[in-house]
Image (cartoon, rainbow over all chains, first blue to last red; front, side, top):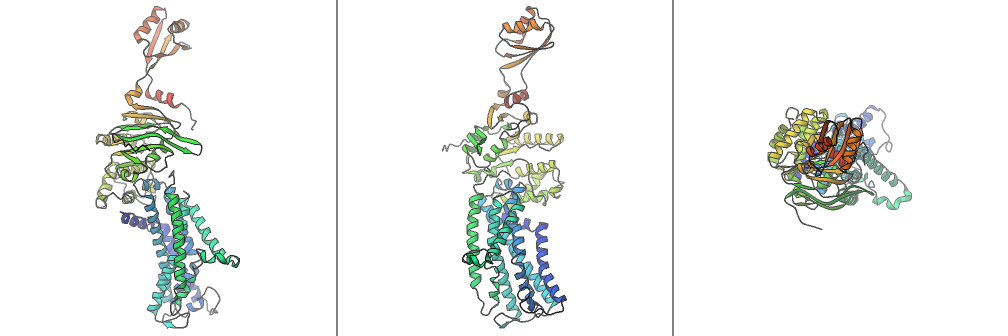
Length: 271
Length: 315
């Protein structure tokens, strides 16, 4: 049953020390951020440092939010690349891939299961960040009703609900990259190579996104809407970037999913 | 495409080939592995044994030719037949950070046809069969090569199988382990399972096989039952005498080319030429003083070396 294998995949992912080390590091991001703000006596002028950093000391709620902004360009894609680059190449490098395939696992099904594993990690990573941020925010700073970017105040539970949507947004942002990593992973038997190549792609996308000369391709870049989740903190909630991000990520999943399938189902497994 | 299945054979290939670039790693082989046999697949390193096995199991694409595995055509019907096939391919493999037991649980969970309810029991039985019960909860990175090899064999035994494909199953095992594997193979064969066992060491499998195929540089150079392959047309003569020149002349008169090395005369004698006692009588009558006279059939190992060539050059 596919259920058995997906369960096995996810349980193996979360039994690896590497996964826990990455999640532990992710949980340190909001802690480091909040501690730094707490220890610095001077008030941060608005507009300096990461967006919303100035609000953190007034409302602990903003720790999670700011941590998302800090981790989205670099650390989350980095850990995602490790997991996605390892999917097929990691199995191939230790030779177990041939035993999975003759068990037998259909190759298309194995790709789906691997993608499900990557999705599970993306969820775990963003929610680790969110929960760690909420906890440290509540410990170090006052927590109360939240003033949105549009100026209205909403209750804390309503604000936390919006934060959950932000976490879903960031999870979705990582899925296109997972598909890219999955594809690269089918090309090699050296997992580190696939991980590094995935990081490179994520970085190049973000560099291109910052070059006004190639503005014409910006809307098609994997990372273009990665930081668009600020719109979720407006009243009424603006879902424009959410929708655009979903479409871009789905396109990347479709294209790189198809490429992975085409490559993996016709490949000689010689490792 | 020939869609004939060959249910009387566990493995049937015709013209099976694998090209890597311009090189034919496997070059048009016709394997005939009868059901119920213990089939030894012999050949030096690099002769194409593992590549053949990869094609049989659908891991590598077939460049040309056809494969029928337990009557199912490969690769079209591979998923239907693989649950009936256990295999050890190019050494064992396992997740180093999982225990031996958890590795088997993982591989069993991958097989859709495996019943999750009996998984625990089947894993227990497979572990016991290869003697890993004590070590089942140790992480595999603490396993010795021999233990990993046993784990690989346990994986091949997770389900009731009709065919076992074992690629170099005694690699890394000590003599004791090698004997255990041999006994296990005999026992499994007695349960009616066809065993296809590849090796580069004839001595390891000669004693258990009923059939053999010998591969060299991508081609099968001999195939048949062990008796058929042991039967020979050429005997080798070894004669010890001090009348060397006379012996050579006498043999030459019979049409036999002999060579001399000190007191030892060697020659290849066609088996239908004459009986040993007639030959020795002829030599004595010619006045050759015989100190020792041996006419022997080559061992299977000598045949193996004759067919595959000697030395360390790998194709």
